[in-house]
Length: 343
Image (cartoon, rainbow, N blue to C red; front, side, top):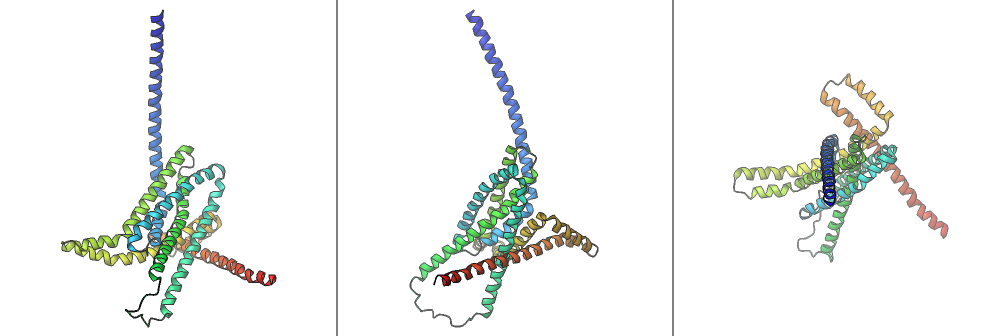
């Protein structure tokens, strides 16, 4: 009897192990299928965000330029860490909003677009003010070479450089937050009907991939001058010629990125606003349909909508800047008035 009971127990254990093996194989196949689905959806989502990625690259390369060459990579790394933190906040927030309040996604993106347009107008205004200051500034009286530097000049310079770095990093991270929000929102739209776990997996993969690609390219761009200098030190004439070409092209590239980055603010912000207001999108489509009769070139048909989005972004940025200035003047005017009442 004991032997029979032991044999029955062994049969039960064997059957249980067979069931576990079968379920494990089924789970493995399902996991493999889900992994394939996640990778496919990630590829599709990343492709749909390609336009925003280009804007993100141009904006960030322009934002981190202008710091000391020895600190460029440190600044890029700081912005990259800030970008990852942005996405750590944005991915769960996007999932929660998509589950509990999907109607809030569009207004939030429009608010971010208006902020981008505002920052773009501010950048244009500051650049114009710097140009005016250079044009009307005095160029004369250089300090004598032997003149002693005022006390604390070196320390003040270090403080100014640290403040510049902090400003660059905070500005780039702030801009990255809005662009990352748009990227996450676009990626979320491609997986809206999928299970929540697959949505989370796709958004996480997109967030990591975007950050690595964008800031890897930004690091390469800001260190192009070092590549040129390294090539100049080689003995090969061809490599030296390539190094000289890189060194000559780098300043033009950085200036171009500055212009493209500012235009991207208006383009991305204007696109968010146009897509968030269907009546405005329909009006622009009607205008483009009229223009299409006069413009036959496919390139212009592609460029015109982008230009209209830039115009919309610039106009909205001017309106927001005027409102912000009005609020600031009202606050500044209110302080003396309240002080006068006290006296």
